[in-house]
Length: 422
Image 1 (cartoon, rainbow, N blue to C red):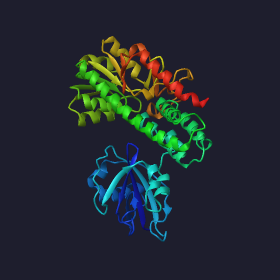
Image 2 (cartoon, rainbow, N blue to C red):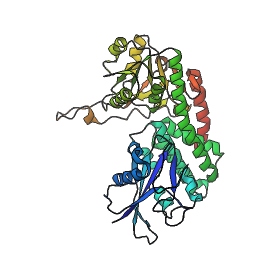
Image 3 (cartoon, rainbow, N blue to C red):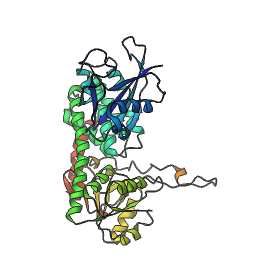
Image 4 (cartoon, rainbow, N blue to C red):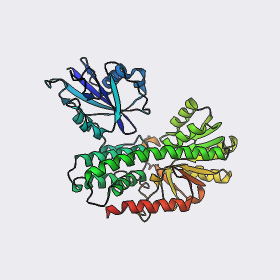
């Protein structure tokens, strides 16, 4: 069966709309995703989507991350006889040159689709790949800034479809609870709601605030990375050690371009291996991959100047929650008289006066990643751990390098934003 594949390419929350494609009919003013008709569709939405994208953007399509596909819908031609398959891809750049049958392109927030003259199925197709509370809850691939952005887009879409605050408040509460280990998710939702006003809130105002805060979350991570790189450059740190996977840390390292980099593999899931491979391929650093157990000797052997790690959350008192192994790295750094810095936006600071229970304490890595044998034994593989504030020399944020007092002030502001939940 022939299919029309509608590819939504998203970059920093905006999607690429095109005009004049082969599926746009005879109306030259009608906008669409990057769409194409495939008469010999493979039945694999990702593969079919990449075929359509290659025709439009060439080899750049290979660099897009496949996110998800949506349930097909009828209406790929005016008779409704052809299936439309929506597919969502993520681009790490907005510099995408579109050719082929398209004569105009524009990056727009998806909520703006409703104000355009579009292909008749476009809004429904987008809703079938748009983020939801369920996808926010289930994502175990992306970092907290990325997931917080998706949470805010879910809030935005709920507000856009709502007639009154009562129609959206449940979604806001569900999003706050979806990822308790990631402070940025709840803080982003709280910031959007607080900015929109006091409940009951006008849903239209919440749409705009959710978009604005989504952009703030993404920009804050970029600015925190620059602040970290600037500080390390200022203390002449040419040899750095890190652990686990953090988009903010990776951006900081790319900007700093150290001479030497030590990366712990981050057992048991070993996400640090990918970080080391990226650094070896994309930076000029001499990269050493080691185990957590090897960190103390690696710090000495490579004459490390500073440690830089990310954070999933920062407590109001300055304790840092990050991947297990961070505490060992911080202790080894203290013994070696090496400063430890955290690169994280202020959205990752938990509100003051919140639940004292650590929502990360019960999260574990898969037991089989540690032991897949037949002997009856238990496995201890916690995903996160807390690192005491006294082991951290500073938190690099979009507001610069923060000490413990400054962290507490941000926590107080987040608590004010969360007041609506009461």
